[in-house]
Image 1 (cartoon, rainbow, N blue to C red):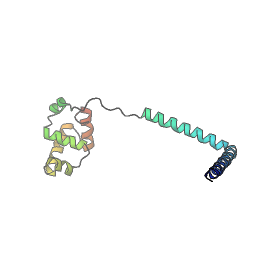
Image 2: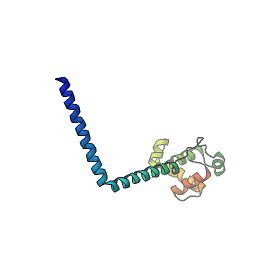
Image 3: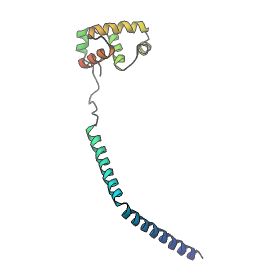
Image 4: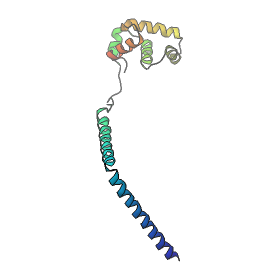
Amino acid sequence: MFRTILIYGLVLALAAAALQWLEYQVWARAHSSEIYVGLIALGFLALGVWVGARVFRTQRPSAPFAPNSAAQASLGITEREFEVLRLLAAGRSNKEIAQALSVSPNTIKTHLARLFEKLEASRRTEAILRARELGLVP
């Protein structure tokens, strides 16, 4: 009995596989142009991903950032002003800088005003740009 069921199941499985193969043959002939276009598109997609990964690869700095202490000394930037500048370059607001340094926001405004004078900047973005040019912040 078990052998009969096994043979019957095997015959049905082979028949189903044959029908699937025939259906695939008909589908592949009827839609051959779509298959070729799809394969070409997949090839170009793979090529684009590969080229993008090679071209836009980011370079990791080999050594950790070391601030330019000579520029800091020549501009007369104090250590506290330098801490404010570092947090400013990190994108923090006056309140966030004040909380991080445990001082009042008015003290931060004073430090920023002095930094703007020393860096010859009128805005936060100019001060950050100038500090990056001088190598004070990453």
